[in-house]
Image 1: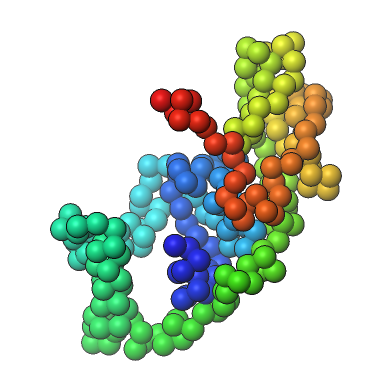
Image 2: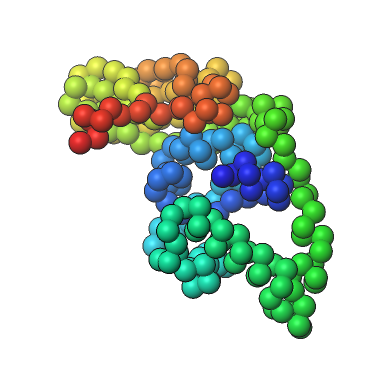
Length: 217
């Protein structure tokens, strides 16, 4: 869906997102979908939790789409897509929203992509270095399990039982592409190769460990 939208409208400078799946939260590691956008050079901006007033335009747009597209009348996803396409077209091209003129009439340049996007050129547009730079700025806290294990992206790594129950700090070393684990005093405890953060895995949205059906139940 994102590739289809980007092809039509170009890459945005930033995307504002809610907390939770499939985006994650600003307090924890970005999800693989967020990593994909970061690699494309799109800034991901997380809304403050439970503060819709901080994102009024998007909230208003969602309310309008709900009223105009009438999702409850749609027989399935395809019909809902058609309804949403119709709503967007009317809002942009026909509705007299600005002194009797439509948005497209008043701002015709907005229909021209500032940063064109071609899915076939995505591997050349996408840069792992952007992901590394973003992650290098972060600090993430983990509590060591009773078996001495921590996890990131669902991949478990052992620190040893001696650290069980303790809180540790995880950082990303972009120069060597390691996860570095330290105690609360900044003393390094371990480092693990970030083998899951390859371009192939991020573009394929295959960074996180997928839980089996038995684990989900």
